Length: 271
Image 1 (cartoon, one colour):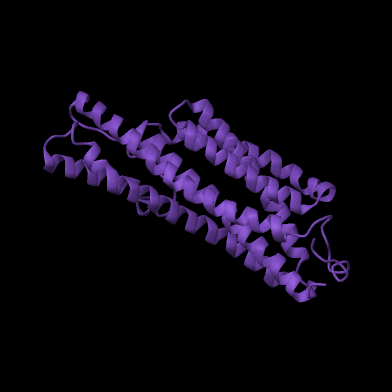
Image 2 (tube, one colour):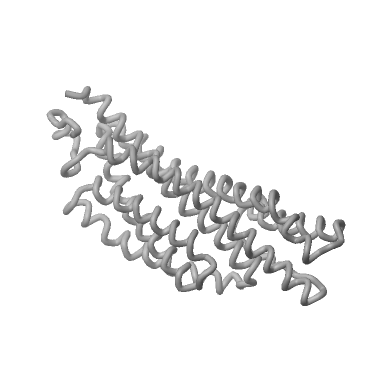
């Protein structure tokens, strides 16, 4: 039989990591997609927000049901399903960004559903894994992980996105901007506007790509569109990799069966 304290600690630690990974993914994804929509496609903040509505609506609706579902199927299944849904949704976004806003909305909806399926069950599992006298500290740590996950996801996925543009955009603008000085200036402006430091506090108004010559602007947009897609795919692939590791750990170590509480944990061993 596994040591009770070790079982508690491992369950709680894995729940903490899962919360971090879910928030890391959700906030980082929103950043890079919003930048793409506003900077390249020229969406207004309102239009971009309306497109993201599929994400927030699914998250809100599923969150209202998640608490009841925990009592029916247990936390383990919901968390694993949520992580899997997030991965599927990100994959849809990676493949379908060039397709249409309908595909983007579908991917966002799947990610939102997965996020909602994870948050409540993970919190429930974590809080039942700690003794009652440590519940206040455990709750504080959970809240901190949500904030850290969102901040780190914002910074890491945004930085991957900006780094990809830095590596590729200048070369791809060569045909549109033969003058190396102008090309350098345009490249630096686009990259700076895509850098997460440019959005230090909120995902603010977009900085659409513009040029005095309409034909040149169109050529820049075509090149930027391709590079932004590549940058987003690298960012979302990093998020998928992180989620896949957490999912594998969850399959191996999240408690099976119904959720436990402190009184029932003693005789229970993980399968």
